[in-house]
Length: 395
Image (cartoon, rainbow, N blue to C red):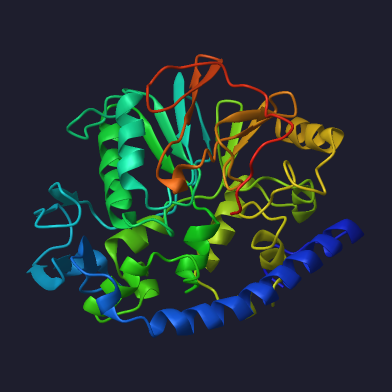
């Protein structure tokens, strides 16, 4: 049992049991998928341009030594070393097509979970579809054609799942990394939240990995998990990210908040810290701790679908959660739909709009209390109620 111990009621124990069953099933699939990926030949994907991958020469003291940086350019591995690890300007030989400035290593976990903003934009489940994400951000005034932040003091929230599925994960991560600094300088913010695909990737689960990255890992002579471990710039940066934040009266996370959360007797900062401490743990290690079994299970914030899928959460149970946390609404991704929608009379907003398909998607906007959505045309319209018969598409 962890330091965050509690007395679980019967409903929570049932919820944890469901989570444990899902974890055990996932473990069996993971082992088979990893073996299959390991056997994949690099000849399956050719003409690869990807990178940069920046690794600290001294992971235990990242600011005390330099950086080793690798790119794969037209299937050829290129390397460059730097004598320092902060304020390093990386060129753009291939992969991410712009120069990058590496900031000092992330050393402190953000304690702030509540923010105020006059305008908010939210997007979810990018899944390596970098070009589509770029077009949505440009069409809706978040960045310009030179990929520079133009949203002023606004806050951009990404509710998880940048990783997996699509072919341009690295580019998407580096753009958000760059925009984070630009937004901060303008008085705004970029909030990248972790989703279930960030969590499973850090734990070595490669079931949803685009086959391009199996080839990249072989070019780099490493594993995909190590490409984003704590010794890398992107891996350390990802581990500095929360799972849950509040902006104005809206609570953002990837999956959703089940009412059993109350029984954990944990604050939102404690939830974020618990995830930070345990990212990358194996399924077997997760199962040894009741709190972790809940957090990483089917009713935890990364995986929960009970706002949309049976057994659907009763409206009065949702109201109790909102009242206890003094919230107006909860905004989530994870459950894919064909747009941004209201649920529970607007108390829940789903923003996984199908970007992972690479063809279309939408963003949510909050502007001084007014909610709207917009797609690739940049035209903001009212957020509609979810249709009774809609197409939901997996995880």
